[in-house]
Length: 430
Ligand code: NIG
Ligand code: FE
Image 1 (tube, rainbow, N blue to C red):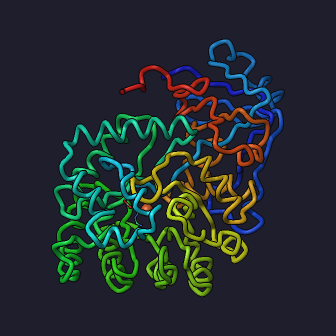
Image 2 (image 1 turned 120 degrees about the horizontal axis):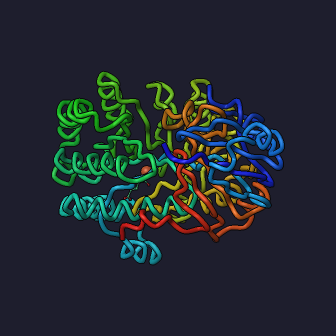
């Protein structure tokens, strides 16, 4: 076992204690459990003690000389950030479409003309697994440099089993080889393939009868996601796909009400989804149903920003009692970024959340959105030793001072992986 790590004297240690049982809602989202002059002792990959520095110093007096001591004086210490919605594994980029959109083309228009998700699918199909691994590993390094220690990753740039499987296998390999934990979601229903344009039901049948059983049998995914949107998958088709996944133990997630209102939030509550994501056009009825069922609303303010759309009403969701999380939605078409801290700034400015609510959204509530609320997302004894240290004195400044990377140190499962804002050497694959 490696050395113990003793993080000492944080100006603010954001613990989010007591939040492992269920995601935080309403006023609870502002209860950060801050300890000033706070310290954390990590050993065997796990958090062994959290508290005032004086107390921990006394408790571990006999062992300090054997530990790696990290001085966090004047800094902010939070749980490692959690990104609960990414399309991590893909090939290529789409700056050409960015240019087209700036000239007035709409996102869906580009997709319907065979670009968009279809363009990335063509690139991803062609890429060798090693190339996909390399590109995605580099992205994961960038996530880590921004303080993120866990990401969810969706397939969906295959739309046929061979490529979906390739993406899921690369995600699995990344989870094994990169320090970041990668949590996999099957998303065969990301778009209707062009050849099924006039027969979408035929494609739904393939997802339900072939892809879902295989993904589950090979244990390549925990979750099952559908892009439920006008012109993509209808709520009825989404219901069929999500219910089929449940039979195989895949937990439903949903891209819901992003571009047009489509009763996606209602459907997420009905099928017992763990999260419904996007929600720009979600109805009040749907949001209330989500609140009642405890479905996490994953907000993606970077996507609205990048698509020049009006953001989801995060303020209203929190006030209605929806447990809210935030995420980058990292993907080449609608959110080509890994900067969760930048997204956190947008969640304040574009969605009306407070900095405290946003910290909760990027840690414990994000962990609950991917079924990891018991293991990560807060600094508590018995949780994984996932900790991020930022070069700011308090949590509000992290969101206030935007567009810069304040990450100083990242500890993942009890190992220092970022030091002084740089990757420790062995991670620099490329
Ligand atoms: O979450 N909305 C659908 N899927 C992705 C975009 C994927 C892409 O454009 O490549 C999203 O925004
Ligand atoms: Fe997405």
